[in-house]
Length: 308
Image 1 (cartoon, helix red, strand yellow):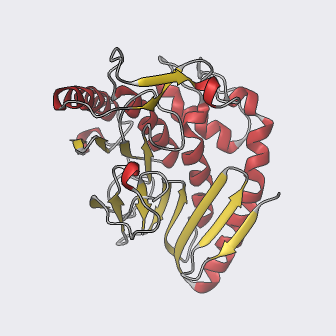
Image 2 (spheres, helix red, strand yellow):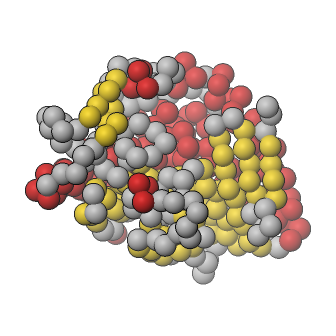
């Protein structure tokens, strides 16, 4: 089936094509909105085919200094993952964020005051001076019941002066595989692709690698076409003692602070079994803003972050 789109009653758009499932919201002049929504739809219709055409390379570990990929989305995936090439990582670690990032580019036009693209919880933002999005954090997907109204665990506001245009969440309970035991790791970064890659890396670091209580299986046994091959991924985490949880969170927070010191992320929230660690923003390490805008965000029900 080809790409599908639906205008929702509240004015948001739902774009879907194969595994790509986007929710899009925007505000601005009505004529400008009509034009950018159409431009976003035309761009979206080509994304999956572009990624499939380079899928073999996208599933290969990032290495070297020259990107071997051709498509804009594929290249942004590779670039976002390149800082982590010292460990096993493929561009697929940033796919959801990179797709959202590609579509949000259609909304950076005159007449659009703010917009967001939510790809299963990985969120790209566009805002203009004085605007903001408020983001709510839903930390533990094990507690999510679609029949019950969502009550977020926390929320935060990102302002235009901040170098944050992307939010992403990773963890072993999410839709993608994880090597770690975090229920969720939410990262704020300069772009959605960068946030996606970093969330994957930090979530992998929330770990108890030698603990026999953690159930792991080779990724290829769970999904035939996974880019992780035979690497063991987390499939079950029993109730752990507080000391173990705090040790895993400390390892993840240490990794997040390393990335922050390199200017790769702005801040992060790590959650494991009801406990959390927060890596707060350090402005002196921040890369320059992409645009003079203020985002406000909320975590997506499907992946640990909701946008409202």
